[in-house]
Length: 133
Image 1 (cartoon, rainbow, N blue to C red):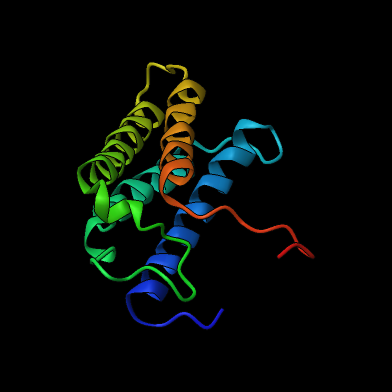
Image 2: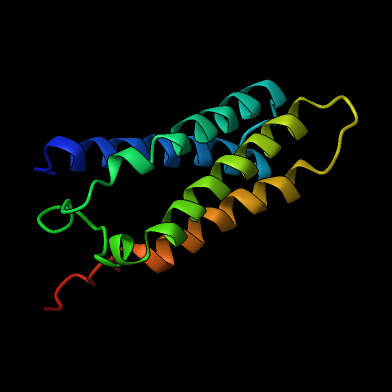
């Protein structure tokens, strides 16, 4: 809410990834019927958007509405590595979903989930509890 420029662009990208992950996650949990083609399309989208992460975090774009920590620019190689890992594991998930061998796509999905979490734990500000300052 209220973000502009590159901060809004990256927030929109992360919301898009979140939507893709929810679609696949709901299938993994059995909340929605499994559809390999839709899940693979969502995984490919996560991979494509992961490629854009580097350019959406220019130095000096923390603060304001951003949840990005300054640690991103202090540890850029590690941050960029997380983005690259996400791209790799999301591509792997898509390939697994598209494979006729019926491999365990849920294990591949867990790798994507773990990639998201590891980056958020290291480089994203924790959401404040309502009512606390």
